[in-house]
Length: 573
Image (cartoon, rainbow, N blue to C red; front, top):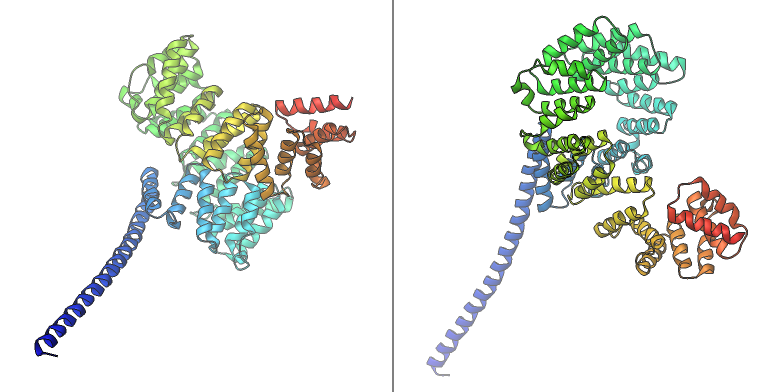
């Protein structure tokens, strides 16, 4: 081969090799770049999670709930599986008494299934919202090692107390104290559980323990409160209770409610010291709007509104305008039914973030004076502004509850249901309201919304199917939902009953009976189930229906269900 050709060939080979190397190097670089970016993003998310969680914890410690919520929600947007952020959301819900806290606790346990502390926290949360069955089920998830901890027995004691099992509570607190002998809070709760016992020896032992704890600076206030509370329940010695209350309110760590308790006892016992103590209370609270508002609220509740009004006249205008004093003044006028002055007080002014409440009070004043059009205008503003934020909605809900404004409460709950953080609580409250009112149409509206937000919830699915069939609203979809719920959990009596009724609605009586007879005798004797079993038997001309239809009378039925029972009873005659 000529030299020139060999040289050219080698040059081409070198070029090809270089090109391949560049190409391969570029590929490796791209892969590395992707890895770096991916890893960098992960590092960034973890850094942000730690930073924002710390910020949320500090905000919680400072009782800045809004910023704590904002920080935790930001974390969850970046990392939906963040257990620390979910814990913070749970604690926020517990502090504000929002039932959504339960869902956050459940999420934490799903993320950390072997965390004893998180499982115990879920059980505590369930007890806070009176979900006794849920708390019991949660405790059952604790591993054997966790059952040997003081915390486990403490929750067990609270669960026993919720069930009214006083002796079991004493036993559980005793075990918690044994496992954590230096924990004074457990000692306090053990003493309280013994104090509440009907057993004279246990009661005396509890009183002795609490009396001893009164010598502990950290526990004396709580121990004294417990002795007073139990003494009131048992109609104990009035002079002794008054002496305990006097000691309590004098402690440096005493709270405002402790002073009010002493004031209340002085008032109830018509003690000569009442007037002097009330005067001193008024004087010391005059420059503290929060204390002053609480004191005025106590005076209103104890029908001392004229005294409260006289006291208000001695306060400077700037004090009366400091929040939350405007609400206290308004409440005094409400208690006195002085609608004219209530209107004058609330017609002008600016209650800042709580101006929606001013419009609500003005609506009340106008309505009580038969100024309907103006009242509706003010209520519309209160509803719109009060439902814009969950915190505002809670304040307005409490006010409406005091006034027993049920229609307006329902309107507000529907408005709050549009807020993601309040949706669960709002729908739960609406469901209970409509169930208590036997309002089937209202239940249907709530269930439609619940199903839209969580179509995987079998209880919601089943209830929607049942109510839809009773109202003959979208029956084909209702039958599909009923069949699906039953297929997934055929042993559930409620699901089986709804599915059987769905078969009845299309004329399949034998199919409905087959489903119902698959249930146990105990399940069939449940009054809610008995009603539908009796209806099925009556449709088949089976006289056994009578006993089941009679059993159904012992439970609360919806109007449509009552009509079905009455019709079935008539078929047997």
